[in-house]
Image (tube, rainbow, N blue to C red; front, side, top):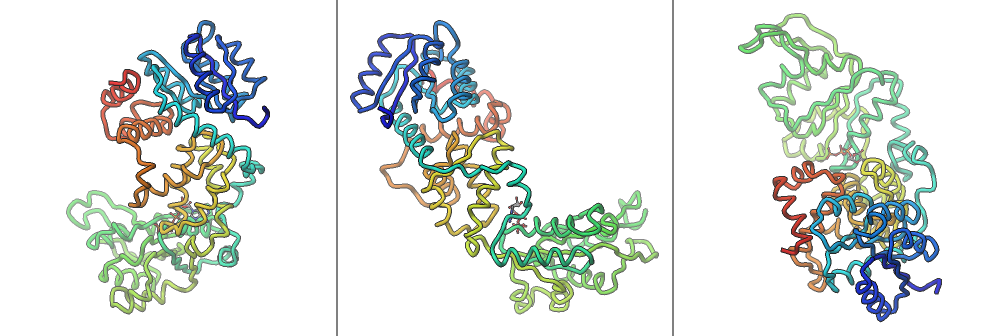
Length: 450
Ligand SMILES: Nc1ncnc2c1ncn2[C@@H]1O[C@H](COP(=O)(O)OP(=O)(O)OP(=O)(O)O)[C@@H](O)[C@H]1O
């Protein structure tokens, strides 16, 4: 009995209780039933079921109250709410309070089967998966940059050595490897950490505005210069000037940047008083500057000026042994940001994560985990949720056997978005790019079946 899959049915409708009991017992599951909410909750504590099928309307207490009590005391139990009514608001509440699913009466055997099977699979995975968030959130988040491979340790050393000087730094690495994060940590670990950190995004820096953006301008320097304005260099003071995607700078701007770096001074457009730049320069690139130099797209002299100290951030696939720690780190962050409670990772889920090649690096990992956490709807990060999240960013199609109908996909997606937006209809509609009435209509359709 202990090892058997246990389902608890709480419904005041005797015919539903009886038919579900027969149906589930036929499937080899142990079943207990209760007629009222209070009896059902008591039974839930004693019987410790993996799955609870809970009617939203009960004679004594509201099903949602029982749901909240179960989620609080038995967080691993998966609660499938059932409702006979056109009761959209309650369904939204149910998902928000942590129901695993909700299904409309008359019950569709296919829908119920799918939901119960998934619930049982999750509860089995939960038993088999170790807790990975044993340390406190503060302990896990203490390291702002996660990494314990040789390459990462040598980066941390470089950051330490940079803390007492203002040497120019070039950070190279593929997209999403953490170049901006590193630049911020270089700044934050330096003696000038309380000074500003100013970013210049070279992909959007218009060539004709290069000087006025960087050096600032005097009132009347050109039409439209109604007031004098400080440029980014002045704004950075004795902090850090971060040139992001420096490889994207057009050649004409590169010449101006080089001149500024060589002399370390600048003059506001329309002004005549040279000023000294105090800030540290950090440049980042996800393109290979050496190759760009060979192709004549990047000035060699500027390249040499920038690479006084070079930090190469390895792609995630080359430091896959950091993956478990990164997963722990992001799960804590995601739990904090989205009020989720994932604390375990299914073994197979970690294997799937380790097998991926991560072309989008740490940023891709963070996004995939966020999607998978929402999809997992519970305390365990599930392998199929990770696979679904990974498939979302690739063009691969699942086996036809796993294909769902468009309607099913839409329902799941809408509910996921709703849960991610904390049940807020306006935000969800905005994120989905549909109007609030359309969203409300969709949600009510799940109840009326129209
Ligand atoms: N080692 C790490 N530890 C913790 N978080 C990380 C790490 N590396 C990257 N991140 C996080 O991953 C995300 C992407 O990092 P970041 O923006 O610094 O990458 P990038 O290399 O500058 O990307 P791009 O070249 O596309 O601008 C950020 O949220 C960052 O905080």
